[in-house]
Length: 271
Image 1: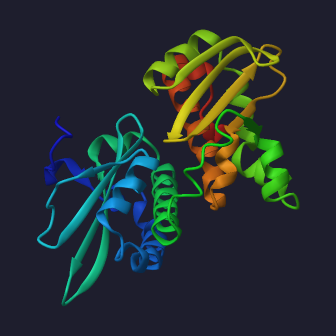
Image 2 (image 1 turned 120 degrees about the horizontal axis):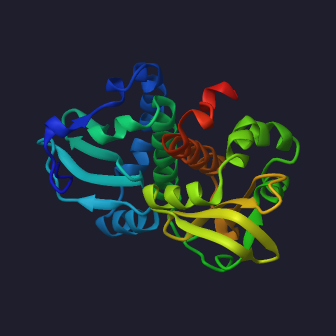
C-alpha cells in the first residue's frame, strides 16, 4: 500500500475512528484559531516549520484550492496529513486526513497527536521557529518531575497523575527482551546497562521533533518509571508538548501487550 502518493481510498478522517466525531469540534476550533497565522506563511518559513517538526511538505494537489500539504508520522503506520486550502471567494480551511493504517491506534490518541501538531504548527506560524530551534540545551536532559516544577509547580502532582499515573504499573512489568522488540516496532533507540548515573533494565529514546528527544526509562531496580526530555523542551511554549509522554507511554504499553498477551493486562484495566 503506497504512501508516496495521495489516493483518496487510502485516507480517512477522524470521523472514521470509533467515536471520532466526539473530537471534531475541538479540532475545528483549533483549526479556526490558527488559520489566520497560516495564511501569511511564506514557502521558506513553511519549509523551516516542516523540518523542525519532522514533517514532510508534499506536492499533492488534493483539492483544487490546496496550497500545501504537511505529513507527520509520529509512530510507524500512524500518518497525519494537514491540508491547507485557500480560495479567494470562500477563504481558507484546514482539512485533516489519516492513512488507514492509523486505525491501529486508539481514537483519543489520534486526536491528541493531531491537537499537539496543530498547536505547535500554529505557534510556529505566528511566532516563528527561532526560539524553538535553539540547540543550546540539546546535550542536557531534564526529568519530567523537574520540568513540572518549572512549568506548573502548583499542579505538578495532578499533571504527573494525568500523564503517567496508572500507566506506570504496566510499564514496570515490561522486561528487557520485550522492550527491545518494542524498540524495533516503534522505531525507537533501545538503551540498556549504564546510562549516565543509572543502571537501566531498559530504555527507549524517541526523536519526537527534529531537535527534541524523549527518553522513557526503567531502572534496574524497577522501583519507578523515569521520563526525561532533552532540556531544550524549555524552548517550546506549549504545555501540550508534555502530552507526548502520555502518547508514547500508551504506544509502549500497546506494543508490550501485543507481545506479552494476557500477561500484561489492558491499559484500561489500570485506569
